[in-house]
Image 1 (tube, each protein chain N blue to C red):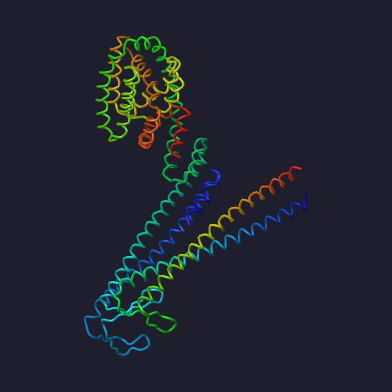
Image 2: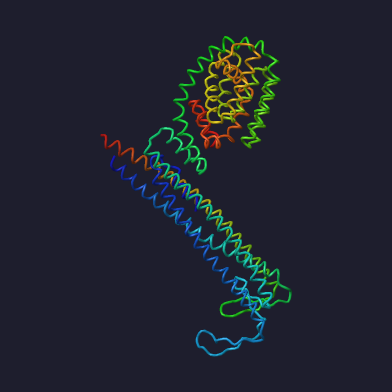
Length: 128
Length: 395
């Protein structure tokens, strides 16, 4: 009896740790997503501005300490690609997040069940 | 951000809700603070932006400016090329722009900032509504603990489940009042009903056979006048329309006797709840009139009486006249009992025909009635059923 109780306690602890890990991951995911959404907004702004520029405008890109002159068309293509990449990344993060949330719910249910079992056993012991 | 706050409240038993609701409220408050700081940051950007626009506007006014040379040392420097700006678009992209073009860029940026601020403000409003909901829930829950009413607790649970602020508030208030009103009114009404029923059975059936078509025209005109009165008092045209339609249907379906009944409900300021209950009773009772009337009568009478005090003396008089006319047509006994008896007969049938319309009307009425106190009385007269319906509809 006591050994099974100990096992259950251990199981409960493990599961609680797993849940904590998943929650941490979700928080990380949230932060990453926030970062990407901000970048996406910035890139979209840049693309809008670039679209408004006339053909012969001088466009530079700061690479490290130097400003490198870039072709306008090239700059537009780069920004467009960047936006694509970011949105793809966001989608990926969304999928991961959903997956993790599912896992979280499952874990939580499992933990709840385990807790109830432990409690019922303890109650039984107290009566005995 | 919101889901966690809501989540903490929902699963909790009603007894524990006050603290939890308080926690949720404080959590939302924190969120609001965060949003506020964000808003301040954005506002700062906007200010900087407008400053920059002003500066860039001024720059090309002169060919060159004398300025302090950097932060390091104060010695005269010269700003030339005053019409050329290197604009950072973001993501490390820079563009050569004239100051005019730069100003345009800045203005566009300002627009996006404004839209962001706008959405942020809306978000803050949302959070504030949520916070007020949680605090109100908390206080209500606390009150509930002190008062200990069974219904009250049930309502609380419902509130938490539904999670809507407005609904919860209305429910609780109405529920408490209803309970109080129910007992007194119910006893009175029941005694009254018994008298009426006796009278009804004797006279009513005779009247039904005789009354027939003659009653229709007078009652209808009365109804219309009553409608006008109602309109004047309340602007709820929709309700009236529904009522009218109900009346028409009733008239077509049922004999003249029923029509007067319909008018009465309208006049009484549309106590919606009464109708649904009647429907329930009527559905079973209609085939056998005698049986049906008795159960139905109590609720109706209660309602009518209840309504009269709440609604204004004018209406009461109207009702009396209509009932009086009906009685005359029947050429039967005159008296308080008679007046009520026609109403009773009519109502049950009416209910059966229009069960759905009655329920629809209820929604509109409920808020009003609750505020006025009229609804509460009516609901009180109908014991257990009204409450359950109330809840179901809300949900």
